[in-house]
Image (cartoon, rainbow over all chains, first blue to last red; front, side):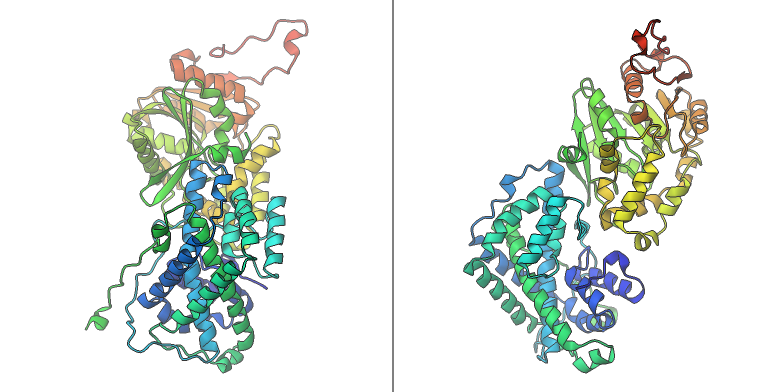
Length: 294
Length: 309
């Protein structure tokens, strides 16, 4: 699997990355988009332009908010991770770590909706809810969102390298989720989280929660206001196979469902459940253009 | 201490939408230590430990550096940094402080001294950016936007360590070099450094020229004589332009004078902080330290330079 780093993008892909960040309201594009850019660079611009109209809507934001709330509810009924008490963090470290968790907690459900919608459209589902509002939300990275800083996939610290290998094994070779690479900047904390998550992830309850989230993403994808037409034939003309793209999106959907749940689990050690359930960056409505208002 | 332990001791303050990490140790009159580029507060760790038994030592990571905010959307010029330092001091309830700056941090210190003298008790600048001495060539290269695509974070870390070594008279300990580049080892850290470098603006030090003669606060100008980045002649200019300044050149020292001559820098600062310029001889040189063990080898120890007990 090949991802395109944000710093590596040039030309059209750099433009797409910028637009993704602005539209998703995040300081990074996320693993899903980086993978698509790395593996399907010709199709990503077409894919994004097709989905974008929905992504910038209140309905999309609400769909992600719904998944976040669902994940928080599920997480609150699982046993606490117990990671935070095991680690000694200074004020600055704690502040930045929490802010990083919040960033990914905001973004992961949005990418989950995106992956679900794209996959469903490619598989011929009719998306576009009749009567749904096309109200749009503001663009731009929230002022207080931290930069999306990720540890290298090959970190200098040997313990973290070993943990990365363990995570990849547990996820059957899937690329590391962004939350793993982000938390690797606080290696002791990440190790404590992984020590708690690894056995938890084997439990039927956890797996059921992840499955429910992934299916919920399928459900909310159908609530998006605008129809999406993603024709496999068009992708073929661009040189990509729809079946491969569908497979990648399906795997991402599974991974993102788990990430969304894991982030809620982590954040419940920092904030009350009502705070974790709510959107950390509520989006204002975008003022309509004059011609739209008319 | 190890840079990870240093990081763990940092506190944090929110400056509007930005955040600033800093160290706060010791008690007494406040002394602020401002680092330069491409370092962070960890630069001052050894010196801070010498001062904190008698002074409250405050060491911020400037915005865009270290473990302060490194997001890609704010002004990193020395004027913005000076304002941020002032807001940070406001939040800590500190009205006046002695401000010590190195490199870019020295330019920030001079700017505060020139524009907000009421915030300054005393000033000390070490191998500081000033006049048109900066940006140096390597910073001009670092600030090019294309660098973010051409060089990986890991490669840049290696290059940075090689470049930083040129700022030391003797090879620094590996833990210090590793620590100085640690915050910049991710793509975000790398990008932040690139943005920091492109924000280096000669105009912002040149516009202070007319104000330097009006800085009434005592200013100690310390300079590692062998600095290849910022030649000592700029220290001479500063000492001439500042009405209440003293230049002390330290031999066998380069850009990172606080490491090359830690003992002497600490002692000079302690004298300056406790007794002012009057405790120091006019325009002096601090020769290379005597080799260890030479004082017991027959003759009397060499006389200490004036101002160093």
